[in-house]
Amino acid sequence: MTITAPSQAQQASAEGVRVRFTIEGKALNATLEDNSASRSFLAMLPVEVTLEDYASNEKIFYPTEKLSTTDVPDGVDPEPGDITYYAPWGDVALFYRDFRYSTGLVRLGRFDEGAVPVLSASGSLKAHIAIIK
Image 1 (cartoon, helix red, strand yellow):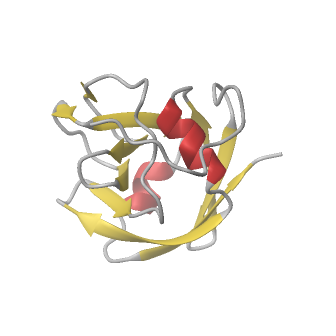
Image 2 (cartoon, helix red, strand yellow):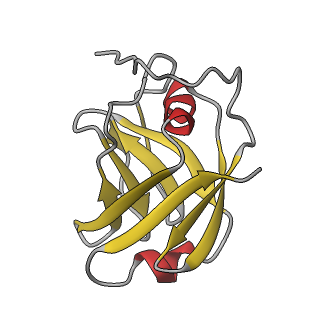
Image 3 (cartoon, one colour):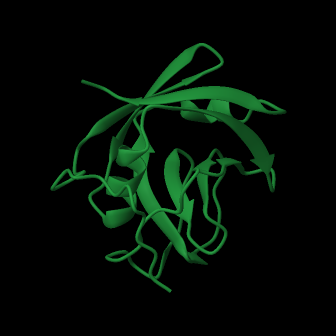
């Protein structure tokens, strides 16, 4: 199923766009890939979210709207530091441990460095996500 978010970003490309996740006071920069899901993700920024533990390998949050998946591959094999979107459930997942190939998983981008220790902290984490201007 293809989902198109009503607030899809007007930006022609998300390639190389930089975003900052400020998690519990720690700034983590990331670079986005260019696909419809990343452009939809950009359209919702800035945003405040609570990151929840999931499966002891990722932190997740649910955006207020589903992201577009019109031009994405069938799935990806996420690595620690990847920022992804799991289309079947509609959640954004930030991986801090390796995981297997998953159908329906879309790579939005990747943290530059330093995300794994911050994301692997136990419990919920408050985060502010914004585009770096």
